[in-house]
Length: 418
Ligand code: GUN
Ligand code: FE
Image 1: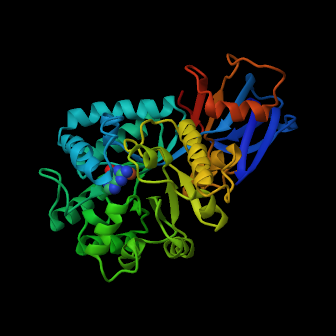
Image 2: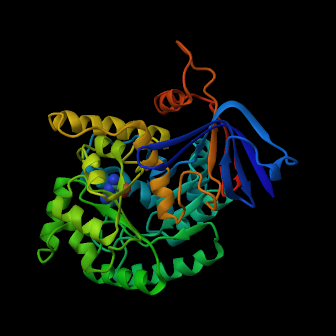
């Protein structure tokens, strides 16, 4: 099947670069992009064109760190720092996911709302519950979302009713992986919650499993000072927090590490050497007062950085909002650094929200030929214009001026899902 979308096409194929094709054509065959063209190639002249007029056509963003069950508590308890917030709000929420009816209701809403925000790819944490995790994967796949979901592992420092035994966690992980075989678009990612939640024995098991089955890994790293001190007490033999994941084989180029707010030079260098992807979650870092991640510095050092909402440490589900959050956070960092580090540009932050995540999923990014088609159409015609605006101006403004009903269409892996 051939698809041809016409409009103002904006792509971010590299950090800081924006390719803009005004009134151009984005073409795909069997769900895979074949190109972006200023003039429609001869071979497509007989095909139907979906003409979106003066609208913007953008890459659909990828949320590379989000907690599915916490969608039920979005906005709650954000006056508390991480460890207290987990005990008072996140753990009591996740405990409810033994109830599969409740899980179904929350996850159906979440899947719908992700699409309604233009997010088509995710790297998501579930709770420790195997069956609810399979419900989550089912609802995401049904809605047309692709990506990774992890059953959380936690065999220590949990809460009443929200902790596994070591053996139970291992057995349930294997049962969950069996249950995942029926899914094609939403795939499993091993998910030790964070170092304090897991014994060394469990981390070692997950590291072996990742290697044996070639599975990706996601977790949290150096988010909050108290958390880092706790990890240092639990693992005095490791050089730093990241060293614990490295020790247990959970530190590869298929690893996502959320936050890294307080990662020092050595920890950042170790991530770069191993090919670990940092997932920056600026809204969460501000909401639960974790800190201000040095994103500009990480990028300058050559680390891979993608973007996440971290719902519900983050207070909203929009990746357009996450781009705004990243920009504000990097400006705060600049102010605190006495203007010694430049802040991110809109083009750079948009790259983090799109291509950086797409690459983790094996795509080239930036509407490259061969990539699956993930795109959104934005209608900004209701915004006032003081003088004629360029497409670039309009794109940049859309990050800050998100409007009800502005998202006219969404495609995920070539399928129109909105
Ligand atoms: N660290 C361990 N668990 C969590 C969580 O649920 N959210 C955040 N932001 N950090 C964590
Ligand atoms: Fe998180």
